[in-house]
Image 1: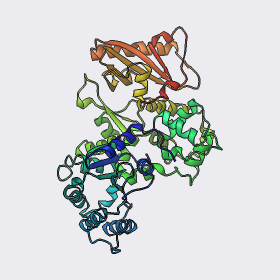
Image 2: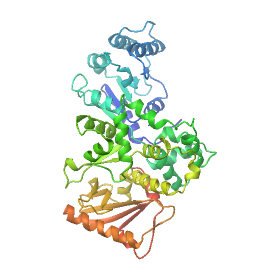
Image 3: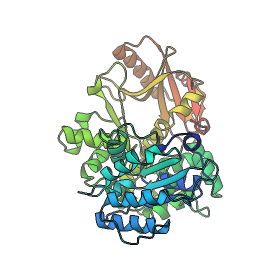
Image 4: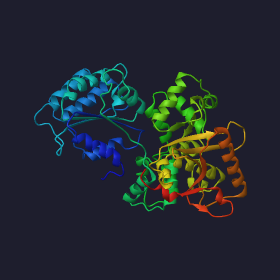
Amino acid sequence: MRIIGRTREKDIITQCLKSKRPEFIAIYGRRRIGKTYLIREYFNNRFSFYASGVTNENMAGQLKAFSANLVEYGDENKRAPKDWYEAFARLKALMSKPDVYRESIFDRIIVFLDEIPWMDTPRSDFKSALEHFWNTWASARDDMVLIICGSATTWIIENILQGKKGFHNRVTRQIHLAPFNLKDCEELLEYNDISMPRDQIIESYMVFGGVPYYLNMLDSRFSLAQNIDELCFRPHGELHNEYHNLFYALYKKPENHLSIIAALSEKQSGMTRNEIAKKAGLESGALLTKNLLELEQCGFIRKSANSMNKTRNMIYQLIDPFILFSLRFIAGNGLTSWTSYHGSPAYNSWRGHAFEIVCLNHVPQIKSALRIAGVETQEYAWRSNGNELGAQIDLVIDRRDGVVNLCEMKYSSDAYVTTSDEYKKLQNRINRFAKETGSKKSLHITLVSANGLKQNKYSSVFQNSISGDELFVDG
């Protein structure tokens, strides 16, 4: 199979193979995003050594699985190692053999350790043994490429990328694998022989996000609505329990994370830290800080603050479409058919929120449509200090060239129609933004709409209009 998208990531791996030094590559990203698939397909499943951690196993179980991999790649010792130091000593001996497999083009030894957070069980010596393996042997070999991978993003960041001990500054390249953008989703669907117009591809993104694993489940014989029914609402559908499985696979105690996500899902414009604590019933202390950071690192939420506000006013927003969809329609609400729900008031409310998330995940594409791809910008959410209804802007693009784009993101089945009431709200919003921020830049109200803008006497309030088609480009 070919690799859809991932141009930058493939280039990083290629440059590591070309280099004349040992390379230590750390790959991380949320569950189901395609980390293992990327490496396996890039190397055509041919490694000098490959092993994966085993979920919900203790140290003995992890070592037994690792031992089986050692034997598969030529180790004659079939006894499970007594600890990780022995395991890596046997790996070192195996990789030192003259007949060890080498990558054919650049003659490199490729060691791929997948899902390593699972290997680091309580009271094990895994981290110190891995440090010892790299620092005392692998890092001295110019032909070595060590690739580690894990869905527990926080573990990778805290223990490997930001480790203060043996791993400090050891990783030579890191890859944060993000969800697909709309262009990649379109290419994947075409590869799977699924015919879908772009407005439906946008709606599929609003449900499944850019998660390749989910999109690969779509059946070409069914409509999008039928696929959603089969995958999400059938009691034994593949994604019916995915929401809870996702969080329990990532975090040992996900209850706080689930409470935070549930709180954020109810407020489209996002929440401050104190608002989250109050809504979720959590204490505003160090644990909340840790939980928010973990959700941000996994790409479930984003944190933003404009240059005129300080850290205390940062706004957190949910930016994972599948999480929002699951909370609204799957998790404990008894909905049994998406087809029958389609077009209801609750559906339309979700659709507006979900499309905003699509836009927040496609800021590079919005900048490209505005012809400012090369302009330095800061993106943030803004909320009025007053109590006026609707006085918030979920996406502000503050440009170095003296312009601020205040983005209105609207999803409608047809071209968006600007009404008299909407015209007045937008004028009020721009006036409050100018007054409260004191910005001296030109303020442009920018519409991002799935199906474009219908011209009428009120549509001139928008200086720019970006259609859904313009989101289908590389970022």
